[in-house]
Image (cartoon, rainbow, N blue to C red; front, top):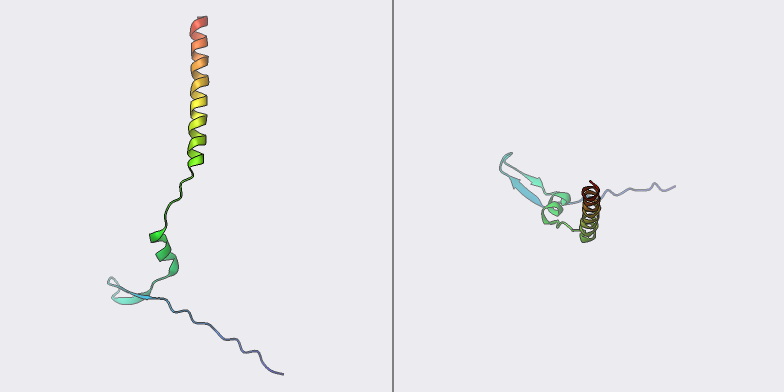
Length: 71
């Protein structure tokens, strides 16, 4: 029987000098992505929230004016 040989793959990361520790450290991929990441805005959420605020303000205004007329 042949034994299965498991080859371990070594990943090489780009190295960056850290002046605080005075040594080179690998730059991990998640560090680089967070610097170039853009925020996506969901404009439909803003429209939805503004619509609800306007509806609530309008119903409150109708309620207040109806109370003022009755008094």
